[in-house]
Length: 248
Image (cartoon, rainbow, N blue to C red; front, side, top):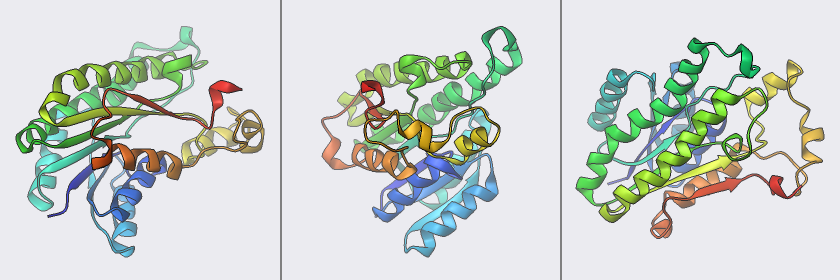
C-alpha cells in the first residue's frame, strides 16, 4: 500500500511543488488548501502525471475542519504517514500598525494551524511506528523580517514546536523537522513584486551566493529527503534552504 502524504497549502507555490514531488515519488497525496479549486488543480496535475492525489478544501485554523477533512483523507486514501504543513499567510505591516486582529490571524493560520494538523495525525503515526512530519518555517524566524513581526514570531514558534515534538515523538518512530526557505520565487512573492514591496528576482538573485532565486522544486527536494526512509536519523532539525543567503 502506498504511504499517504498530507500537504497543507498545497494549492499553490511551495506547497504545490511539494505535492507534485511527493506524488512523483509514489506517495498518495492529500492536497489541502483553503482555496479548494487550487487544491483540486494540483491534485489533477499529479494524477495527469501518473500519480495518486485528491484535493480537499481546508481551513487549518479551524480544528473542527481539520479533524473532519483528515477523516475524509483516511477514508479515501488510508492512514496518514507523512504530514507537511505549508499553509501560511504573510503580511507586511509596521509593528506599530499591527492590529490585534491581524496578529491573531497570522498566529491562527501559521502556528495554531500547524499545531492542529500535527496533533490530529501524530497518534496514527505512533500507532504504526513510522511517520514523517515536516513543517515549513521561514528565514524570517532566524534573522527577522522587516515589517513582519507577527509572521516572524509565528514561524519562530514553528521552529520551537519542531524541536519539542522531536523530543517527544522520535523515540516512537516519528521524525519531526522543519524547512526554512528564503528568497523563493512563488506567486505570493510575484504579487509583492508587482506591488513594489520587494525587489525583482534579478536584484534579489545578485545578493544570493548561488546567484538566483530559489524555486518550489528546491524546497520540495529537501522535503522529499526528510520524508524518506533515508532520513530516519534526522530529527528536530531546521534545514535552511536559502542558496547561501546568510553568507552574503
